[in-house]
Image (cartoon, rainbow, N blue to C red; front, side):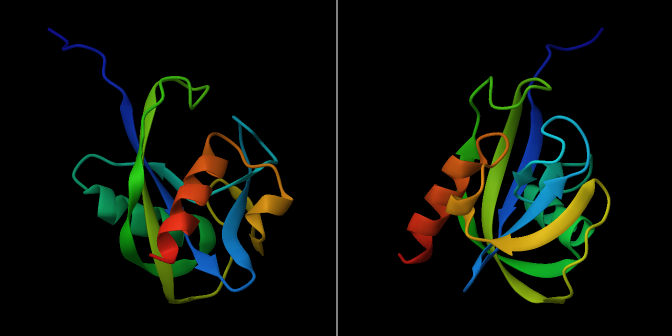
Amino acid sequence: MAGPETPKLMVDVIIPSEEGVVLIQRGSDPFEGQWALPGGFVEVGETVKQAAVREAVEETGLNVELARLVGVYSEPDRDPRGHNVSVAFLARVLGGEPSAATDAAEVVVLDPCSVELAFDHRKIVDDALSLEGS
């Protein structure tokens, strides 16, 4: 017997730099072609922290260290694919070279205020940057 349907768990990673924030251009729907934070679904058997580090490497080519939790984003309509809850982390780069992979079409560092972001990533970025100085 199947249990109740529950939201899927995701992670998003905010990687700030002097020039802005590391963003990926989405290579698939939803929001194909739009800018977004690196992130994705947590896999069975991994923690949210492991998922955040893995997704950062997979989508940006950057090895990161998680600096702090930004927040949990659980609005039921935040993702058109269904009710997905995201745990967002602020991270710093340990190494690697930016290179798009998996479902990212491009990786750039941009001023996040200069572009439209997919999902609720504007709020996540704003929350992260307000924490960064504290």
